[in-house]
Amino acid sequence: MNEIIQGINTFFENILFFDIFFGTVEDSSFPFVVAWLIAGGVFLTFKMGFVNLRMLRHSFNIVRGKYHTKDDKGIISPFQSLATALSATVGIGNIAAVSIAISLGGAGAAFWMIMAGFLGMTLKFTEVTLSVKYREFLPDGTIMGGGMEYLSRGLADKGMEKTGKTMAMVFAFFMILGAIGAGNTFQVSQSLTIMQGQISFFNDYPWVFGLILAMITGLVIIGGIKRIAHVAEAIVPFMVIFYLAMVFWVLGTYFTAIPDAFALIFREAFTPTAVAGGIFGAMVQGFQRAVFSNEAGLGSAGIAHAPARVKYPIRQGLVSLYEPFIDTVVVCTMTALVVILTGTYLGGTEALDAAIAAKQGAVITSTAFGTVVSWFPTVLGFAIFMFAFSTMISWSYYGERAWVYLFGIKSSIIFKLIFLAFIVIATVVDTGLMVDFSSILFLALAVPNIFGLMIMSGDVRRMLTEYLAKLKSGELDAEAIRD
Image 1 (cartoon, rainbow, N blue to C red):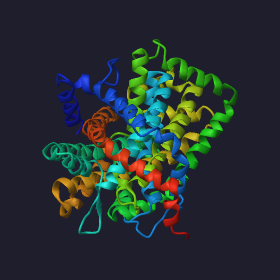
Image 2 (cartoon, rainbow, N blue to C red):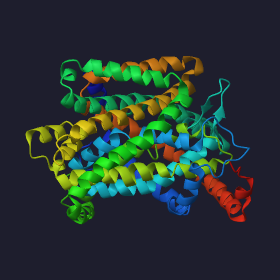
Image 3 (tube, rainbow, N blue to C red):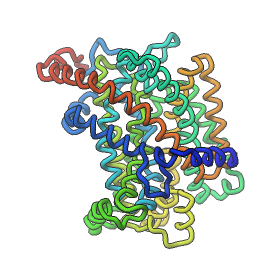
Image 4 (cartoon, rainbow, N blue to C red):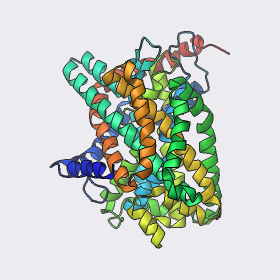
């Protein structure tokens, strides 16, 4: 398996335009895809009138059920959709990807992660709105949404039927590979590394860890989106609160140094002395790892939001604003502060230097917590396991929907079995290779997705304007059901 993945990596790296489009983790070039993500985020943020800032309060009211109506269509609540999408994003990326970004791009990478989260809020809003608008209710009672649907059907409405269909198929193909790579094997390999440090049995029998995780995951994903949503609804709030409680403990220990940490983040975000390639190096690392964590601009979250019970597509788009905000602006920033304040991203020990070289971000973060409280790595091991599990159950659904789009609903069980098999396989796959391979697949999704978002952004803008007019007139309050 390692040889196969290495071969794929080598193939990509030997393509003439690979470095231009995707870059490599170590180089200082500015990949096209990162520029594409930034351009898309800036363009949509201005076009939507900074919806990511001015609509957060209304979004919160939607999440708590204030605007439920008798005309809502869907199979899960807006909060369950948000929880499912968050379970895919609030995961190992918040623990491992942050440490990798800072160890390779310097403390300034944290600043660009925050900026990516800010711009990602509008990207997420746009893609989720389109996903709900173009969702398809299938005969088996499930709902198809996400980039596959709005690229094919939305671009067809713009007279680009063949282009849309081709881009949708490419998107679905990369979504399947991304689900198996970043949404599965990366999560397993990172969590296994931590668990091996806590339970020595897994050093000799890593496949047992994979088998246990596969069994637990299988019990959830076989039940489809409703079971996934119920599990996500229960564990996501607990996970976030549990992890942030640990973070605040560390921050309390270094309380007086927090202003200096923020000053360092800001200074290194705009200085040519950043670890990997100066300003551009910090920016590339920040945006790449932020997208790896919050998935904004990739079109994946729309799959989780498509089944939401809502009347207006814009309404669920507004709910999705909280994903990048919670995932990146809050959780990733907290992790960055822990790693920077403790200095573990700089290495200095044989174990840390090895972890940085192998891109084992979870080890870097775990070591950071361990410098404050000796038993924190054990507790963090539990958190990492839960983060990995929550991400996997959601990404199994993303991949399964993409599989159904390409191969039909009768074959969906095949993807689920493949997904579960790779959980066990991942326990013997090199971590560094999987990080690189997963990053390639993730970034590849952004190319067709953001193209579609820009083409259809005018439709979303008109829908938003109409929705805000109804909100201002009181029409939305009048039609809401008071429980």
